Amino acid sequence: MDKLSLDKHISRQFNSDLEGLKTDLLEMGGLVENQIADAIRCFEELDTDIAQRVIDNEDTIDELEVTIDEQCTLVLAKRHPAASDLRMVLAVAKAVRDLERMADEAQKVALMAIALAEDGAPARNYPELQNIGNGVLAMLRHALDAFARYDVEMALSVVKDDQAVDLEYKAALRELISQMTKNPSSISKVMNVLWAVRSLERIGDHARNLAEHLIYLVKGKDVRHVSLSEMEKQVHQ
Image (cartoon, rainbow, N blue to C red; front, side):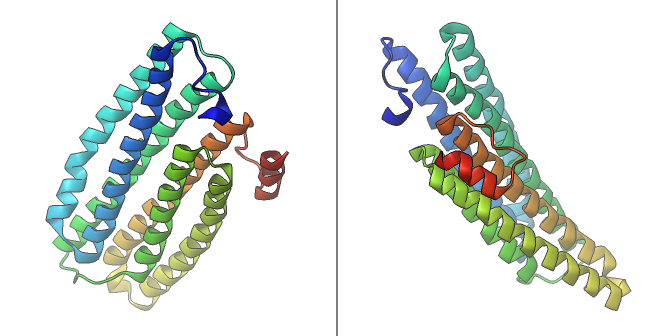
């Protein structure tokens, strides 16, 4: 907190408001992380009960997004924050949107698992999904840790990891297309796997967004849409 001067206000309530936003963001992040882990598990095991739980829990994530958005609006209206305080509120508001979209993608994975189960596909470990799933879960965990610690170096590592996930996704896409070409009767099943893998890749993109929001919060620099090398320059200036 010291490095951002977020704990030096005359009003203790202002301090509490800002800390509350961060706490709520991290709590929501933990719930989304569980959603993604459950989505991956239900897909590998074709467990429709777990899949349904992921779908049902989406409402809780949506409600949290609305609640935290309202809290951000109240802080803006009551406190008129400036400098790093304003960046804190804006970063949280943007981050919760990305978290909610991650939960949306986890729900899509669960829906694909149900579709596969109903299509009579056997439960098995899908290596394409497993590799990307592990990668995006690690990215989200590190992005949340970066927020908790205001750690820009960890945020940079998340951006680097997104590049690795993108490569995994391209490799998975080639493999899945190859399977459909060799066995046209498998197209409907493989397409469900493909859409699930695509959703996981999108989760990685949103985790990268979280990292970029953290860099904006700490450094006051908008690093969206810049190359990794340029991002590193701006962070280390």
